[in-house]
Image 1 (spheres, rainbow, N blue to C red):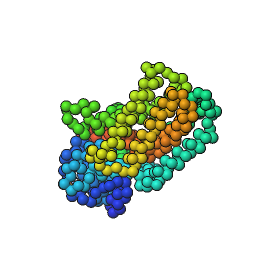
Image 2: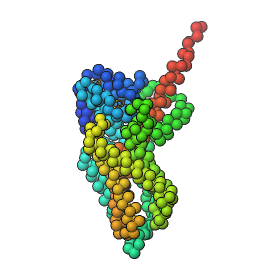
Image 3: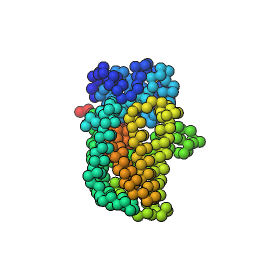
Image 4: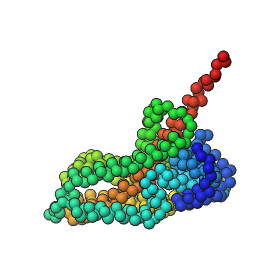
Length: 387
Ligand code: SF4
Ligand code: SF4
């Protein structure tokens, strides 16, 4: 690991968020109060110190910013108003840009023009594709599958999904290279990656670290708003992604199913979860009601606006279809795709949605590292025999 100091690191980080790291005098109060910091991962102070010293490689190889869930307790109690919680958030954006080999994440996070321009550009491409590829427009009744043949949409869904999975997974692989291959001298047995894989799945499915941001035993999942709202958002989003990528033929149909049919209530539940999570976060950012909502980067707003617009246009397509309004259904469907597509192809591999992958991967890799270190400590040292 290189100890070379980069005097521009702090300035570079400031392009990714409102950090006030220069005010920190390293008292360590933030790490002491953080409910998620441990002896092995003494964040946020250690990360702030890395930035002050310009240790670019150390920061790039650190998993700690991903282990912070932005409860904000450190920022509330910092005697210097150094905003350590926001600093961790800013480092996550910076790290996302470091992992991304295409350079797009850096452009999206540091330039509003780039972010808005690419969303508009992809949206226009979708509208042009819809104008060129749509099927016959039936106006006597709603025939969405005639206007937008489901086999065509499904094929395009798969092309998009394979593309975004490729970019996201290649960036996750670079995260592994930085944090494990370059970031530690530990000998990590391959078997540990297999035995700890459950951590990855468990953390992705439950996001249970959010619960530790408020450790009041009296409170359950529903009374912990940070955990509950993030879980609703992720669960709704993943369900919708599975429905459109795997089950589109069942989901996009001209048949009207009864309300008790799984096709309808699964869709309704996912929509309610998405709406709940999105509105709660927009409300929080407008009211600035929690520490994590006091600072909003343009990428936070872009993400929420795209998500809300996608959900609302999806609901409108459903309503127009059920009311039997053909043209309103078709036009809103195109608008829905023009918002949904940039949200998926830009936000998942390069933007805010990538956190959904990086966070559980970081917890998994940190667990693997800690188990490997414990194993190494437990092994008796080989003493050279005296001959
Ligand atoms: S961020 Fe604040 S609490 Fe943390 S070490 Fe610096 S001055 Fe102390
Ligand atoms: S925001 Fe919360 S979880 Fe993150 S470093 Fe501060 S106290 Fe820890």
